[in-house]
Image 1 (cartoon, one colour):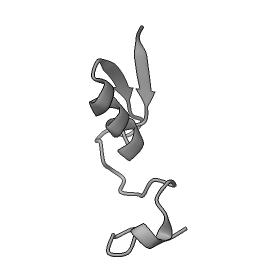
Image 2 (cartoon, helix red, strand yellow; image 1 turned 135 degrees about the vertical axis):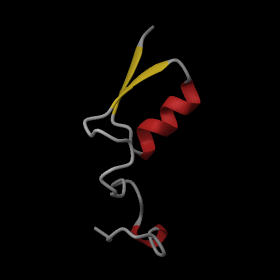
Image 3 (cartoon, one colour; image 1 turned 60 degrees about the vertical axis):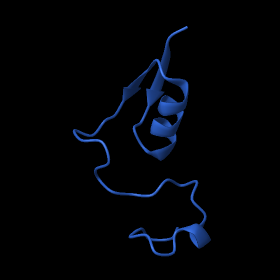
Length: 54
């Protein structure tokens, strides 16, 4: 089975590293830019990060 991961953010890269043989597609020219937080991060966990709380 062929697996495609759409988005090279924290969740996409975590999945890809765990399951190995997958294709990762990212819309931006460089992985990790622009810097932003995943919407799955609780505001209490974002303290100390350079990311605004939702």
